Length: 185
Image (cartoon, rainbow, N blue to C red):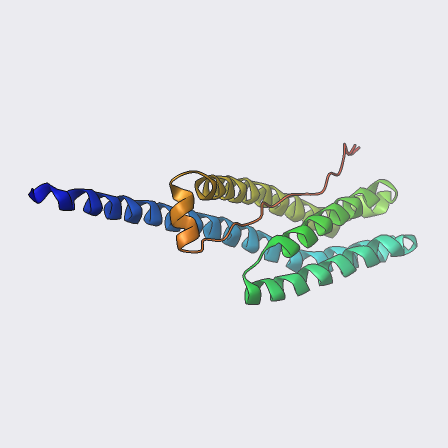
């Protein structure tokens, strides 16, 4: 008759194990977001220099340059709000729009051969491509971590522990569809 306490103890131990898995998954999501944040900050620091170089050559492309600057400002505002609220969806959407605008900015070199020949522009464009590659890897890691975390929050018995301790779902980092882009060198 001493065995009656084993079932509740096993249930508590199983609940603790599930709770710890959810915490580990949530921390993995936070780590993935921090990696994305680093790359987004690197990109944000590069944008003003890139815009200035392009502005010197492409005076007629004022609308494109103004859109990039406006989207960078919007992304920075979302980043500031994001750190206070702890939500990421609006910031990730603003950053995806900025990425699309930067792609269009880099395509301006097709219309301005002298811009393409500028060493400073090439250096900045290469850095931007490198940052975008790192951002893509970070985004994949983050989205994988989010998928695992959300799957646990939606499956039994983890969903019971998740709801009991108010674990919140998080958003994926989705990019806007840019379609096929042809770049001629």
